[in-house]
Structure formats: C-alpha cells, structure tokens
Image 1 (cartoon, rainbow, N blue to C red):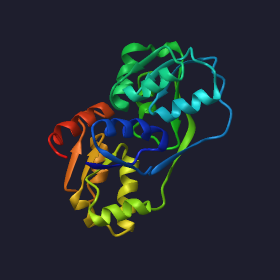
Image 2 (tube, helix red, strand yellow):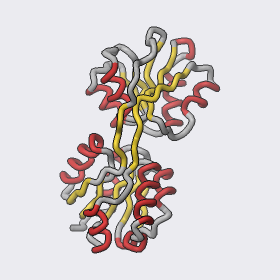
Image 3 (cartoon, rainbow, N blue to C red):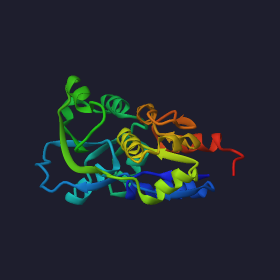
Image 4 (cartoon, rainbow, N blue to C red):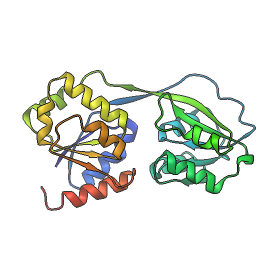
Length: 240
C-alpha cells in the first residue's frame, strides 16, 4: 500500500521505518512542525517527577536540563522510550491517554512526594492538570514547545490525492487530523479521499477525520503506534 505519514519530522522516522518493514510505500508530509520555546527552566529543587504527554516535551526538557534523576510518567510507550533514550532511568508508562496517565500517577505516586512538572506544548489535549489537582497533587505546566501547522498541502500530496494514488493516511493526533481536513477542504479535494482509508491512533483522532468522505476509517484499540500497526497488518493482510 502507498501510505501518507503526516507526523512531525522527528517522530515520523520510526513510523516510516515500521511501515516500510511491513512492505508499504511511505510518503512523508509532516503537517506539524515542532519549535522549542525559548526561556529558562524554573527551579527544579522541589520537582519530584515529569509528566510527559509527548516525546517532544521530553526532548525539549532534556535539551535545557541535565537532570536525569527525576521520575518520568509517560503517557505512552513511545514517549517512555524517548525518556529512556534521553538518559532517564526511572520511567513509567501509562500505555494510553491522559486519563490513563493520571491513573498511573495516582497508583504509584503520593501527593506529598513533590511537584509534578508537566513538560508540554502550547496546546494540550485533555485536562491532566485538573484531574491531578483535584486529587491533591501539585502540578505545574511548563510550555517547552509549540506545534506549527502546515498552511497548504504539499504539492506531491495534492497530486497523489487527485490521481487516486494514495491508499491510506496515517493520523496520530486530533490537531493533525483537523489540519489535514482543513487543508484538503481548502484545496477542494474532499471527494478524492473516497478512494483512501484513514488510520487513526484514537477515537478523538477519528472524530476529527470524519469530516472527509473516506473509503474506510480505522481506529486503533489503544492510542499506541504498535496497536495501530497491528490493526493495519490485520486489515491489509493479503493486500499488495
């Protein structure tokens, strides 16, 4: 299959490698670009751990601080792997969404342990801070990066959609899905999506993608790349 990888450049690499290993042809067209936010970190003396809802937040933090003794609570396995790769030794993963992350914190951390620093982007999904604040935890959100959306569809993607040469589109976040929908609509290519499937990391992503007339919408059973790729393998077994 010919699949469109819409992930930001650094995150796109592992997805492209995995898809190519499965025998698919991959076209990379990042719809979000990650830009670090300038500024110094706050005093970390009373910080017990980091709440990581994306790999981008961890990368940005690791670029500003050499502290690797802080416990990391990661939303998913890919984010946890990034934490380990950046040198953090004490890493736990919720293998899910922000609600699962809040549950992980409540199950493994006491409110009195110290401040939980949410290393985040300028836009966040869910209410992780509110959930944990209500349970007595001290949470501080630190914006370390911003995700900038693409202004137009890349020419290659427009041509492939027009020609019906795309078999599927991989969407990993509600914001990416909304961006893709808006750019397709702006280009007047809504009907072209009727010959392609969309592969969504979560129901929230699928809800944003539904504004286009896809051939089929596939939603991962859990918001992890491994689960989405397992679904892709199951649904495309035997296809060229």
